[in-house]
Structures are given as C-alpha cells and as structure tokens.
Amino acid sequence: MTTGAITPKLMSLSWPLVAGNLLQTFYNLADMFWVGRVSPEAVAAVSLMFPTSWMFVSVAMGLTAASVALVSQHVGAGNDRRADNVVAQTVLLAVAVGLTLATVGFAVREPLVSLVGAEGQVYTDALAYIEVLFVAIPFTFLFFVFRAVLRGAGDTKTAMWLMVISAGLNVVLDPFFILGWGPFPEWGTRGAAVATLISRVLVALVGIYILVRGDWGVRLRLEDLRPDRPVMKKLVTVGSPATVDGAARSFAAVAMAALVARFGPIPTAAYGVGVRLMSVSWTVSGAVGQAAATGVGQNLGADTPDRAAEVTWKATAGTMAVLFGAGALMFAFPAEAMRVFIREPAVVAEGVDFLRIIAPFLAFFGGLMVVQGGFRGAGDTTVAMALSFLSRWVFRIPLALLFAYQGTVTLGGVSVAGFAWGTDGLWWAWSASALGSFAVGVLWFGLGRWKEGVIEKDESVTPGD
Image (cartoon, rainbow, N blue to C red; front, side, top):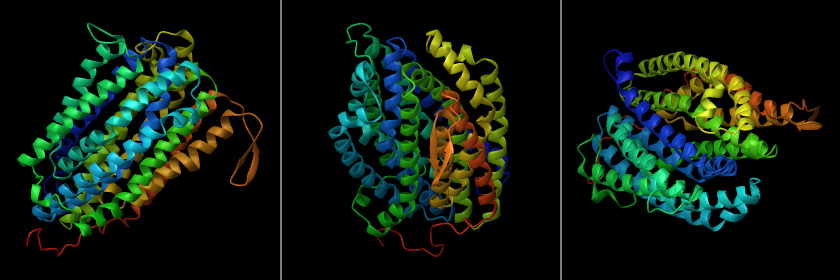
C-alpha cells in the first residue's frame, strides 16, 4: 500500500475483507433464519443476547486495533522481525484476557440476562444461548487476533479464508442443532450457540497452524511466546482506547436493546432482524475501514502521511457510494427483506417501519466506520473511541429517550418533554446519530493530527539481538 495507484490497491486489499465480513453477516443471518423457525421468543432472546455477549468480546477489539497498527507500521518501515514479535505478544494477551472474561461472564450470566429485561420464555432461551457463547470467548479472541495480524501484514485473503471456514461450518451446523435435524437434539437457541462454539474452536486451531508456518507475511515464533513487557505495554496503550470503544459500543447496543424490550417481544424481534439486515452494510464499511487501517499504518511507517490521508478519503467516498445504493434497495423492499427471516405479520410491520427510517442513512453509518479505520491504522485509537462514544452515548441513547418516551426527560441537566413517538422514536435516534457523528468524524480527520504514528522510526534492534 506504500507505492503505486491507491484505488486498485485499496480494492485488492478490501475485497477479501468484504467477502469475509459478508460471510460473517451471512452466518449471523443464518442464525436468525433458523432461530426464527423456533418462535418469536427465541428471536427476541437472540436479539437481546447477541449485543450482550459483545460487551465481553469487545475487549478483543482493542487487541486487534493495536496489533493492526503496530504490525502494519513495522511492515511499512521494513521491521518484519519486530512485527513477528508483536504477533506473539498479541496471542499471549488474547489467551489470558479471553479466559478471564469467559470465567467472569459465565459466573454472572443469570443476573446479566435479567438485567437486560428478558422475562419468561425469552429469559430461558436467552440464558441457554449466552452461557455457551461465554465458553466460546477465548477461541473468538484468537480468531480475531489471527485475522488482525494477517491484515496488518497486508494479507487479507488468508483472513478471508479463515472466515470462510468459520462461517461455513456454522451455517451448516445451525439447522442440525437448532431444529434437531437427523440424530441431533433440538436445542433451539442453545443449538445456535453450540454451532458457533464448534466453528470457533476449529478456526482457532487452523489459525495457530497458519501463523506457526509463517508463509503468509507474519509468523508466530515459539521463542517469542514469553512476555515482552515493552511490547505488551504498547499493545495495551494503543489498544485500551479501542477496548473502551468496543465496550462503549456494546453497552450502547445492550442499552438500546433494553429500551426496545420495554415495548414488548414484537418490536424486539423486529429490531433483531432489522439490525442483522443493517449489518450487511456494516460488513462492507467495516471491511473497507480495516483495509484503510492497513493502508494508513503502512504509509505512516514509510513516512508518507499524505498518501495515508488519500487512502482514507478514497475509501470513505467509495464505501458511501455503495451504501447509498444498498439503502435505496432496503427502502424499496423492506417487507420482503423481513419475511425472509420471520413471517409473523406484526413483526414484519414493525420491521418495515425500522428499515424505512434507517435505510436513507446507511451511508453515514458506513462513512464513519471507514474514517475510524483511518484513525486506528495511525494508532490514534483514542479519537476512534471518542467518535464511537459521541455517536452512541452523546447522540443515540439520549435522542432515543427523548424521541420514544412520553413525559419529562433530563438531558445534560436540562429537563425536556419527550416526543412520545414510541418505537419510531428509537429508530429516528439511530439515524440522527449516524449523520451527526459522521460530520464530526470527517472534520476531525481533516485536522491531520493523527499523522505521527505509534512506532519509533529509528528502531533497529530486533528481538533476540
């Protein structure tokens, strides 16, 4: 990404990430498709628990953001041996933190499910789903790390194939475990989580093999699997804001799901399906944002900051053009999209309202994600975190309270009358927050304060010297 025309290289780097993320989304949609064949309560349970589980998994976002920034900048500067050492230290952190969070999450699973508002059959289905997902957390962490370090080295195709293995196996296993096809038990929501666990374990083993072989740009060297405190400190320093960012996003998703749950299982089920459909756009923008992060990191490592900025602007413009088209399709055919996953007329009607309000703003959701990718590639994860916090906690959640509920709402110490728009108010809060935070992100990136990077350009000592 440091020489030649930017657009074709950006496309070459992006398309495997887009394909991989689309597979991840396909797996999420397959989960919802088969769970939708169980009951609306099962759909509501998965809709509540999916963002809840991501409160724990979001810690891995810090590790991946830090590893992409450090690996890509070392590769751009020609320090391949240092990049390998970053890989080993990231794996050590991922295992330690993943095991800790899995233990904590499993221990508090029952009060956690109650806290987000699950009741009756929804509570039972939600608990069966999330307790298995907690077991999968360490393997999920390793899966994220493998993809991240390969991306940082510029190898997005192998990262894509890891996703093909994971998502493909999950999609195949879903109907057997959820609906009890053949000799398998009919586990409902628990079956969806078991399929995820099996696929994550397999892909973790494949990822270890790939990195130990070292034929794909970076290598996991066994002699590096001992704590290197300076590198770990830098990983934590660069990754901490991204971890807080991921946690803030996850908490916001849980808070929004809890606000929706107050209106009953029908809106909750519609919200779950609608968000999964929206995630198709996020897969595109998230993938291009990841490619932008690699391009920015390698160019900062090579001391070409203006080229790094050009990578981000071109990636943002291209992503938004695609998502404007996707939003138009979603706006034109909302009922057809909903009926793919659930046939309940009331759920479909609520989902149509959701998609019609959200669709015109899809491009702004995606544009912000690409700009954040540029910041993360520079190692300026604090700004990326601030933009996520702004989008969700300054705009989305307060606006949701203001628009959706009746009575007096206190925002920033000021009491204002709620608009009482019901669930439509929640959907409008999503759209307004996307537009506002995108505008702030573009202005912030244009200031150019991210161009310093996070590695010392004169580092010449390699691990083992």
